[in-house]
Image (tube, rainbow, N blue to C red; front, side):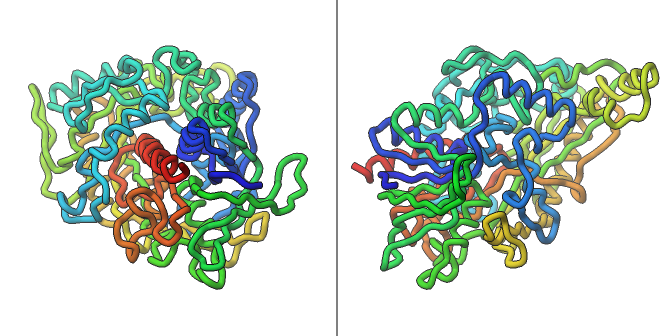
Length: 542
């Protein structure tokens, strides 16, 4: 097969690039390692019901087994807990939270003396952020006094605050903590031929109504414009020309229901890797040959290095009154007050949050709308029946509150994705090994988030019951940094236009190119970078 552009991966990044280039008149082939799931609404309802009954989302999207095998070293990293292989990628089950990075995120070295600066700034992405909000369909309001500058209105109005948000509001006002709307890639009204949210409450792992964005929308648009999508086509390796300068083909196996498992190839003028922060570096490392024994695009040795994630911090408790949790399956309010200066305190009409002199990074507070166990979880975990079970459900559901947070992790070379020589996947390739741990600065940031959360819950009058803190924090599964962007080919993998330094016709469009990760959910920035890269690829193909 021969084409203008071959894209590996059909998550938001690959789908957006494929859609833009196909609609611009280019021949596009998109390869997806997983299947194309049934697109009918009845199928989504079936998957939702399966999740509600079992509580295990991985079975919903058929993850697991040798195809998805991995290993981890250091702090255990449960990679399969939050990825999907299939047309649409992890957007099939994502939470749908979309925020712009702050200006400070692009200048971490200059501002804080840690990490590195991005080779591009907020102003470079600003028009693409607006375009990404239109493409994904974002509901929001320009009511964040601590957010980055914007001139464009959101495509849809924000969702109203949930009932539990209204409980937090008065406590936060007394503390001087600002609450504001949270950007959501789900429809608050009909948008882009998709309906408004009807409140199933199972956004993660599946939205039966299709009100939440998935990359399937842009895959469909790409196909309508003439693109070819090949599912069940895990790419095995990339191959370069005789000089090792340009990528000339990808090799994949035909694993579809009617396939024979044989290897097939796609030749193209331009190649785009959009397989995420783990599979993208793995593919580059698997493509090693005599000319590039350390893997493709890896003359810097940075492929797979600087793996980052966001860490979760949370504090929860109970109130004497009902909180109506889980009526909404997503957050409607956040606080970015402690993002650019997490050490600052706050003072309100009747209380305060203490300042700190601890060195820590950005904090994004989230007012959680699904705290505590769901009734089905209580029932599944209980051995009681009848009235005893009803009492247990009433005691454990409906009065929980929680304040969550994402905190940033700095890039460190020792945190990495590499090949495991001792374990192979279903095609005999080394599986990815995630080597990962949490540094002291990140632990201090989690502790600072917990401190702020405690102040809010105490002011609310909640009895604190649990906390996700510095020692038991876990990842948000935002895979970043493994093919970092930079101007120096000796320390980075891709240039500011996302082309690999070593192979100018091979681009990487993924959160793997992030030099630093901030503390904002990464998908809107992924989308903005994808649209920016698509413009440059379009120009290169003309």
